[in-house]
Image 1 (tube, rainbow, N blue to C red):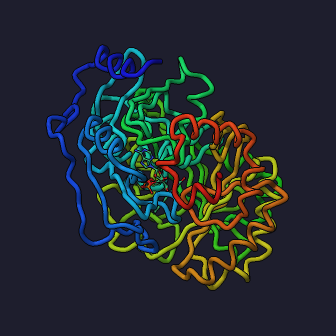
Image 2 (image 1 turned 90 degrees about the horizontal axis):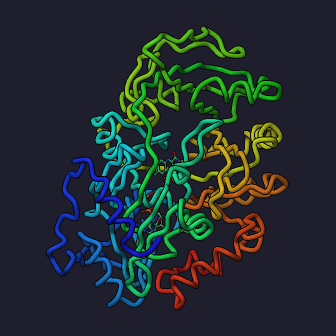
Length: 453
Ligand SMILES: Cc1cc2nc3c(=O)[nH]c(=O)nc-3n(C[C@H](O)[C@H](O)[C@H](O)COP(=O)(O)OP(=O)(O)OC[C@H]3O[C@@H](n4cnc5c(N)ncnc54)[C@H](O)[C@@H]3O)c2cc1C
C-alpha cells in the first residue's frame, strides 16, 4: 500500500466515530519539554536526556524527525529496560491519543499511536465493539505495546500485535509509510513488532469484533503436580487463563479463569479445578494484598475491557516498586520449563513477589516472542532489588536455554546478543528492514545496537 492510501482508506469508511481527528495539526511546532528527566513507570530507569518533544500531529512528527539527528519514541513508559531510551532526544506520543476511524464494514478501528488500551476499550465498548484480548493492565499505549509484542493470555489468543492490520510510520527521512496485512505481506509482518527501530509509528489499524461479556472466576491452591498431566486442560478452561505462584509451596496459589459469556447464559462453573478451590472473595494476584485495584471477579459478568486486564483502568498505582522479567518457551515444553523454575523456589524466595504463567497463540510477526510458536510465558514480578535480580536472571536464562526461551522485549533480561539472535529465524531480515527505513541509524539506541547490530 502506498503512502497515505491508508489514511484515505480510513477516512473513506469513517462512520462518525471520530473523537478529535488530527487534533492540533495546525500547529507547526510540537510542545517540547526540557525540565526534569522522565522516569519509566517502575521508576527503575531515568531516561538519559531531558529533551522530550510532544507532537500533536503526523506533520509535526515528520518535521521533527527531519530536523533531528538521533531519537527514540516513547509510549506510556512501561518498559523495564532501556529499549525506549536515548541520550539525545525522545519523542513522546502522549498527545497522539485519538481514535481516527471505526470501520464497521471491515471490523477495524484506526487509532493514533499513543492511545492507551483502556481509553480505546471504553470507546469500542461504547460503540458495541471489542478487541480480542488485553494485557494485565490497561494503561499502556497501543503502539508501544505492539512494538514489544505485549500479550495477554489464552491458548487461542495471539498477542496484542497479532490484531494489527495496518501501521503508519514516519521514517528516518521524515516520509510517511503505511504497511498493511492485506497488501504488504512480509514487510508488514516484519514491521509490526518493530522495537521502535523503523521510525515513529503514528497510526495503527486494529481488527475488532462485536463486544462481548467476560466473567472471572479465581481458584486457589492448585497442586503443582496437576500441571504435569493437565496443563493444557487447565490453560484451556477459559478464554484467558493465568496461573500465579511464588514457587514456595509446590503449588499454584491462584488460577484466574476469564470466560466469555455468550447469550447471557450462566456458565456452569465448577467449584473445584484439578484440586484448586473456587475463591469466595475477590483476590489480588498476591493473595495477601488488597484486591480493590483488581478487576471484578466472583463470576460477575462485565464488559470485556473491564475483565480481561487484571487491574482497573481508573487505578493509577502511586508507585511501581517492582521489576519484571518474562520468558517465552514453546507450549509443548511448558511443564518441563515450569518444573525447573519450581524446583529452584529457594533461590527466588527473597526477591520474588509473584510469577504469572500465561499462554499465547503462535503468530507470523518476525520479532514476536511467539513467532511460529504456540507459547507459554513465564513471568516474574520482582521486588525492586536490582542487584540481586540481575544476578538471578542469568540463572533462570541458563535453565530455560534448552527450551530456546525468548525474553520479553520490554522487560529485564541478560541473554547474550548472539544467543538472542539465534532464537529469531527472521532476525537478519529484520535487520535489513531497519536498514531500509533507517539507513543511518537515526532510531537506533544502545539497546538496539547491542541486541540487534
Ligand atoms: C505494571 C506492568 C504490567 C505489565 N503487564 C504486561 C502484560 O500483561 N503483558 C505484557 O506482555 N507486557 C506487560 N508489561 C510490559 C509492557 O506492556 C510493555 O513494556 C509495553 O511495551 C509498554 O508499552 P509502552 O507504551 O509503555 O512502551 P514504552 O516503554 O514507552 O516503549 C516501548 C517500546 O516501544 C517503542 N515505541 C513506543 N511507541 C512507539 C511509536 N509510536 N512508534 C515506534 N516505537 C514506539 C519505544 O521506542 C520502545 O522501544 C507490563 C508492564 C508494566 C509496568
